[in-house]
Image 1 (cartoon, rainbow, N blue to C red):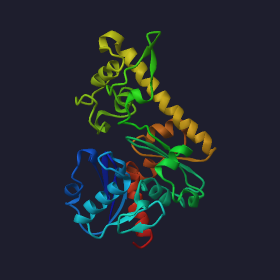
Image 2 (cartoon, rainbow, N blue to C red):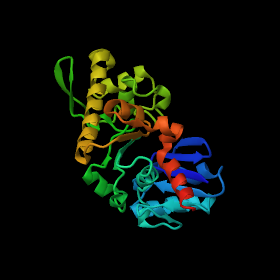
Image 3 (cartoon, helix red, strand yellow):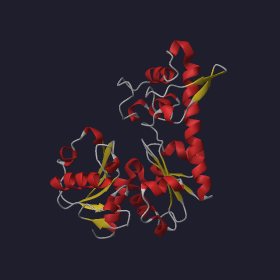
Image 4 (spheres, one colour):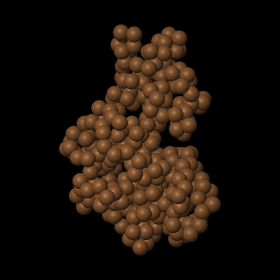
Length: 302
């Protein structure tokens, strides 16, 4: 059995001991069927890509994803926010990937809180009591602080920052998509160029020098105008803003043992303490929902 997590930007597949991550932007009508055509047999699937704005509604997105998967994997089963597996498009399939992770980890790490810091979002998930997680939607999780729309790669810098102090002066930032979280985290050493796996805002390479230039551009400047220190100040302010959002959510949940997953697991565990799931699960932690839905399906005899 393979595990599949179909997001709006990335499709993650766990096949045996292998983790496969494909950039698959659904809003560009990405070919899910083509990507999955190299696989066969049974599959356990979760999704969050139904929210992509190429779909009129979540139900339309769910139907598209289910039909695309079942075209090449007719035995696929889909995990829902009711904690059950389904064979047909149903509303409960919307954004259930986080719940699959919780379902897997709840017995191993009772009373912990999982922070899955990915390329686009941060899922903050108290694992106990599990029953209170059932039926939660993206809307309810946003309201509770369980879903934070910032991540390690795709978040526009201007979405969290309005101004930054550069060379002692308060400097407003442009709201254009000039720089991303990937630029900030690359400049700060939180990720490597190889881990910057999404397209950059200007379509150029993911290097530290070019990331510095993109950050400077968010202040309507060339790098020569603000200097490396000015660009780094923007990166530091962005990470401070992200960190504050995470801290606020964790405070609302209360003190619990922390688990960190996703591409940002090392950053989360080094910042807040707790267990880095890469140490526990290896590379599966980077595709946690895909790994989790496969393990939950096998545990349940699906």
